[in-house]
Amino acid sequence: MQVKNPELFSLIETISQHYQTNIANRFTRRALSTMTLDAGSWGQIEELTEKVDNYRYQGYHLDELYMYILALARFIYQARRQVAPNLKFMATSSHGQERISDSDRVFRDMAVNNFASNLKILADYLNDLYLKVVALDKDAAGIKQPAFSRIPELKELGRYLVE
Image (cartoon, one colour):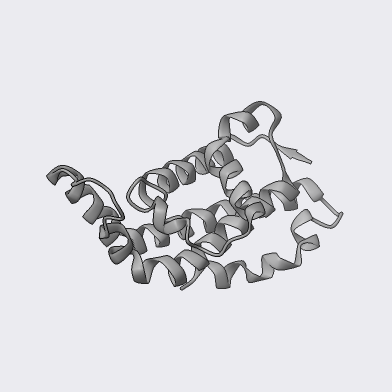
């Protein structure tokens, strides 16, 4: 079933903007690339955070949307464990970069110092999205089995999102 709910699109846009601005920005991207996350998950995260307009007309398939949510939840879980503890070192080491301007240094320090808080905000947004999708799924399923019940890994979502 395809979902074309305006609240859903608004929430996905919020997640996308937060992810691109506060999580995967130019100061943290190199550190994020060191995470152990499979290529499929990276692709699903990209679908959710960068291709919102592609889905505006056709809508999201519930199964796909659940997989995107899981991929971003796994990302949050791994980022908390693998990136957040070493981000300051990884972001401030030069690795052949030229000297950065004072304003870029301020933005870099803000990105690094607020990374853990921004991950929590992203987790909260993602949880809101999940709850919205489950509600839409239950409404659409009626007496049939909702799509989320066919994806066992969704039971791990709470563990992925809560530190």
